[in-house]
Length: 118
Image (tube, rainbow, N blue to C red; front, side, top):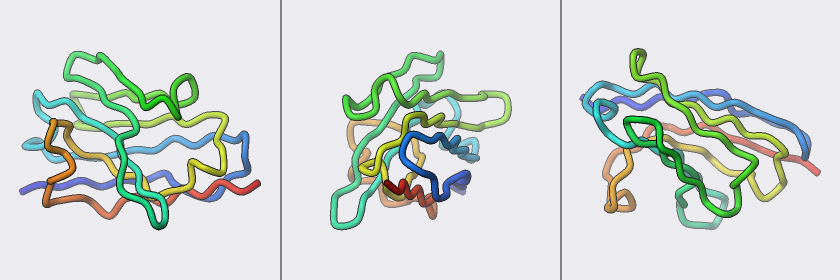
């Protein structure tokens, strides 16, 4: 059974930081690249950051040098450290595995709301 539970969101002022956590089931996490995604109001879900099973990372240009993705393979956890937050980072953040067809995934967790105030 697929399980994805995101947490750690909240309300923060611009310039602040948050750390998001994601607990994933083994069938999603094992040997898979994982990613964080976000969906802002009125916009499509977008890819924020990816991490391979051996720790190679990639970031959207909009978050590069501000966000850091990491994973704990032993505990099936994925994290997103978000620094220097901007109002445009306001969105619901989701984690999931990463493949080229991610936009067609049928299952997503409930996500965690991040709101950045000016």
